Amino acid sequence: DDQLGALSAEMRSDYGFETDSANVDELLAERTPGDKLKRAAILVTTHFHAGEVKELAARVGRPWIAVSLRTDIYAEIARLLRSSAVYFVVVDARFEKKLHRIFESVSGAAGFHALVIGRDDVTVIPDDAPVYITRAARARVDDDSLLQRVLPEDRVFSQESAREILSLVITSNVAVLPERERAVDGSAA
Image 1 (cartoon, one colour):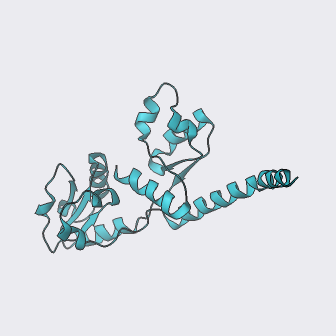
Image 2 (image 1 turned 135 degrees about the vertical axis):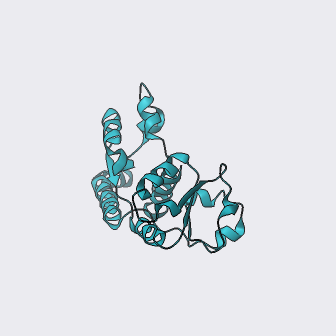
Image 3 (image 1 turned 90 degrees about the horizontal axis):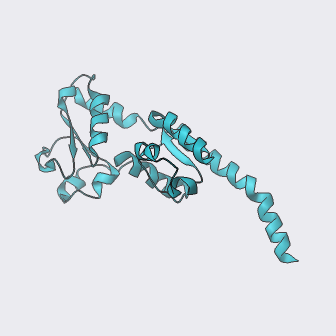
């Protein structure tokens, strides 16, 4: 899944979390919370699934956070659509549908093309067309010439969410300092 992969990768690379991603609908369908959910130190979601994740977090007594994502890429795509077709390559058909909902009302929406790796032929993308490829899709694209034409993927979290995550990390680390100090003092005796 494109968004799950991007969120997990950024939590690992930028904040040092060990991550495991899961589909919220599958977690809600479980009668009792599975080990994956019970082991989580924190649940992270987008605002789109905040209600569901709040419920899941309450079931297992874990903290949770709803992050906002950067919107500048979507604004740039909307701007480009006014003058040309734009291609967005993804791995998850659910994300493809979300993207179509996002862009259906913008000027030039007919020029928006979301292609799903493994289902759609990405070789149909014109050489001069603007292309965005999600992190998950980049790993599955076989066409090196296509990968060479796109810019590196930026971070996905908004600045506000990045600050919130850093604050959470610092607060959590400060909270365990007395426990660590007791452990160090006890081992020195």
